[in-house]
Length: 614
Image 1 (cartoon, rainbow, N blue to C red):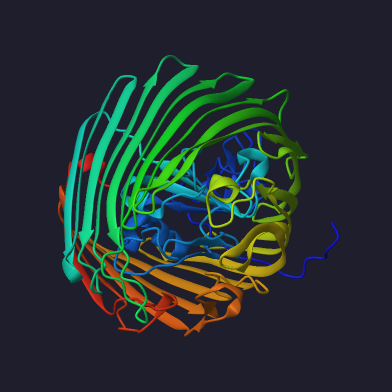
Image 2: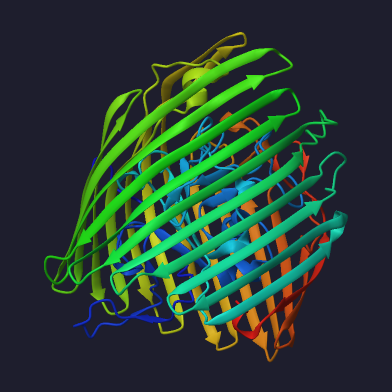
């Protein structure tokens, strides 16, 4: 490690998994406020023992945010994660809207942060990035966010971090029903419904959502429909078969900046994804085999039309040779790409596909029931650039039953996308992967049974960044960029009583010249209060030193947002909701030239069987 960390980070322990988690069966230690996570390793493990920095946001916290978009809710709850917005709902793909950054890394578009659904990668075959409009809070059971590189386990695009959306499953016997509707400012409407069924070893959950808005500016309409399936069958005590599928259709209009407005700048998108997994669980080993397929059909107002797909397989096994020891061996394969044309310009970009294959190993060893050592490596092979070696190492020391110290070093990478290799604006088939080294230390502390905090400091050094150089029409895409990011993060929660809780997080980052959608300071405070049948959630978010374009060209005004979300349980089967966003009616932007709406109001009704209430 060639740098000395100078900072510490604090992050909230955000989980309803319970305040006590005993990890070792023969241990008397109880780790308060430590949820079990699966994203930092391939094994379910207390977050205390995972050296990586992981935030957990539960379905209850997603619901209490009142946000339709899952990413909007994460932007509040996860320190150093920021999502650029341009309207009431909907991001589209024609502007910075939907740009996700973690610790200053995201890319333009989002090729440096990997989105997963139940561990399966989600990105467009041609452009290499996810579509934020495809992810709704309604479908998530919880979200695990790895803040920092996770390329050893997940390969390309996990250079800056990972957002793993773990979907809802039907866990209750019998038939479950739910339906809901919300209406609010700018003719914003949300409709949802679902049915679940469980009998014996079979469980099924099927749901659908429709959201639309006229938008707060002319020509900013948004319309989306989403369907989701999660079904599982327990074959026996050792094997479980699970099928997941989703389809999302949306059309969005980009109104342009207030300085250069647009009138008919639309994008029409169809995305679908499906996977089937066979999970095994034996005394000494467990793991999974996953097969997945995703598809996209995109049409743009300017004549551009593309079809893309991503098909692949993942296999991993966790071996437990003796107490406190886990050896994980895994391999994965992806075949992604597609074809694109522009009918108006009479251009045919051709068909392009890339094959990537990786193998990895991860060793976790517990010593004295206090010290967890973690080391691993991945070898990735791309049909374009050849081999990439990715190592990581970390340690987690549980000094006392209430305090854990962590340190880690890890490498991340991001393969060049097909757009960069073969399409536009200046394709270069000789591009190499972007690379990153990340160094961090952290502290998890339970001050009392009611107060929990996490501190982390990091330095990230990137190289080989793919940048566009020159002036049109003489443009070049080259591996020419370098950066150093340094940051601190704080978060925690204080449970004052059974019905009152305060959550907070704060992050500071020095991104150098890489200011793209990266606020230097971000603060969130949330207060949750319950009284009999009523729940109230008040949140405050403060954003400082945010720039609306690359290279620190256009600094946006700092802003503070205050929001309130109220829920009343009218009966055992019905909830009523009222919310107000931007309660102070602040004028602000997260993208240069795209003013956000002022004060907005929403009201809704949720109907459900008693068991399905989340």
